[in-house]
Image (tube, rainbow, N blue to C red; front, side, top):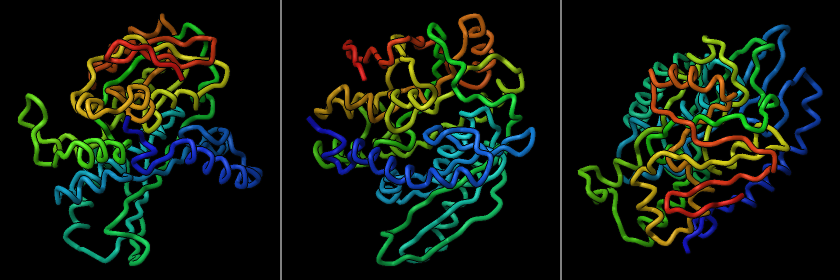
Length: 339
């Protein structure tokens, strides 16, 4: 079986590394009035009756797909999406971002392409890119890396921390448009190293190439989620489904679990990766598997929320909250996975 660790990414070791780093930084939280605990999608700093939300993220090894295709005009969208989608998860509306572009050597034409994606992502998210940094780091960076740090704001009494989540709440899943920006080390190993595909090979029963499918930019969820904020629906939790799959739900509240039994049809790219001898439990731990964002609410509110979401995106009820602290997922090939 092909695993994520065999591709060079050890999720468990990564978690231990983050824990070590975070534990050392914990004492700095005393310097300001911090609202959220570490481990949530975004940090919140209180400023009287408002809170500033902050999040940082990068594009990751999806950059290698861009290099294979010599196509750099979408990775900026990924950078924006990975940041703003996290900011939404605390009930905040994203407002601005700074970017960080580290390069092996300056390449003005490539930088211009990257900027095109940043602009598209920013305008779609209604945020301003208010500055950034470009660093030439030969010997440290190979080719380039792209990351961003974003801020948002929310009224303190409208923060969505996840603490209101209760058993029997329902999970509304908003569909992804593919892999987004997580799991590319495993995808590349399974598809290119082991199976021998190239970015120019066609997807099964499609005119779309594997490269085109893999480089598809991460979905931006700002418009639909901000629309929910403006309607002031009862929302108990919000989750951006990134690396770690549905285990991301554990960021929201301790002491509850989730039963996910009604997922939409899995996009073909995931099926193709799975067919390369990747364990099904590994698939749902690494990839979003067709759901990019989750809204947790009461059963009574679900229909109203979905009616608003359907104006922007595809969504459906995918499961419910339980009280057993386990995450159970009905996989597309029929098995039940438990984390």
